[in-house]
Image 1 (tube, one colour):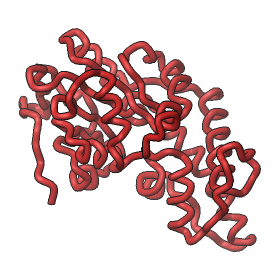
Image 2: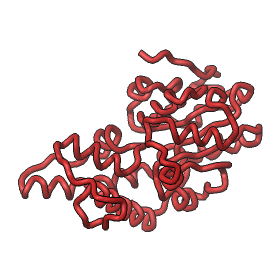
Image 3: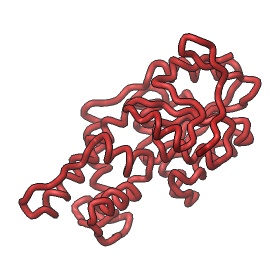
Length: 258
């Protein structure tokens, strides 16, 4: 059992984040800052259901579940890792291929590139937005001199943040492109969070991680961060706590800045 720390309870469901205790807050992007988790889930479903139908040879198959399968196998991970992990869960093994495989190729990299194409088509057609409570919290933190960063496994993070109108809120961004350049492993390894803290010039113990994925919560805990906040938007509070969240909230409107 992971021992839990906590943020002070201010009553009425509010939790205080004391700026005397922390110098920085590092936010995950999808599902924490931007409303893109549903767009990702829809793209994954379209990708995997096509693969599963072909594997079934015209027979019945169990489709990709945009809640359970999404949370368990792909949420918060680099997309190629998500492809490997989900297909392995169904006993499907494809050649690795290479990162420049076209989206039509039936390899791990080809499917990952196909998912990226599906996601971008959804994003460009429907756009996205930021969670207002997250934006309010970030603005409060910045006014009090707390440094803020955003991390994402997505290579499309700049376009997503731009579409949501929040690209300029953060001092630094560690996304899928940066992670690939630096050869940083994906979550639950804490490397992306540690790199964000390094670029902000703060010690992990003086920084807060805010995540909605169990893999990201585990990464924050493994990285030695001072506080790990889990956001439960889909009914996984217990899983977030088991993964190492010190505090679980339904929305960042429940977090006040002291």
